[in-house]
Image (cartoon, rainbow, N blue to C red):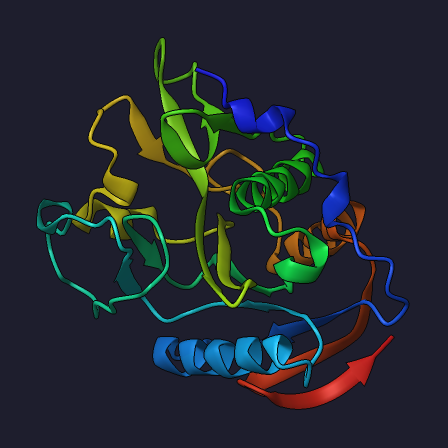
Amino acid sequence: MINARQNLDLTRFASSEEAGVEWRISDAPVDYLEAVAAMETRAAAIADGKAGELVWLLEHPPLYTPGTSCKEADLLDRRFPLFATGRGGQVTYHGPGQRVTYVMLDLKRRRPDVRAYVAALEEWIIRTLAAFNVRGERREDRVGVWVTRPDKGAGFEDKIAAIGVRLKRWVSFHGIAINVEPDLSHFSAIVPCGVVDPRFGVTSLVDLGHPVTMADVDIALRQSFEKIFGPTGVSGLTRRPGEAVYLRK
């Protein structure tokens, strides 16, 4: 079942501001609670007009995060720390080899439409995957971005990217996660995003036979982001939330 969100007009999310969205990459795993605190602070500052928009790319140590729709039965084995989160969605895994991207945008200024924003995030992922000749697709009855797996059998599909969004005063935070080369066995301790059908699993770019690096994915993410959301500006590499090691244009 193809998702009707693919028919939404996404062009109105683009920003023409010359400064562009700040683009930040953390090169070491970031503690989850530190990341949430940094997002909360930045989102409040954006809403108050005291800071610019931010896209923050990082990895987390292994952990599970239940969203607001999570059910107790979705947690099969709490082998890693569990962090409750106010984002939408169900339970998911974050860990090394997964590119987590937190997106703090002022939707009140860009376009106050949650459904269209989720569709824009999906499109961003789909275009990023296309850079590696991977066809990502939306599904009406399942969250995230999926790839068909005819090699596993008729009707089989695997999830390659997750989406979880929270808004405060029309500023977004949390965001997307693309599986680049995580340990896929870590997903076996949960029912990822509440999907129990055995035909639907989890995959990654490397699992699909694309030996890409995190840096490769970061480049594709930035190029695809600019086509949907507009220009990015100053870039930063950080080792802790908010700590810029160097900046470059």
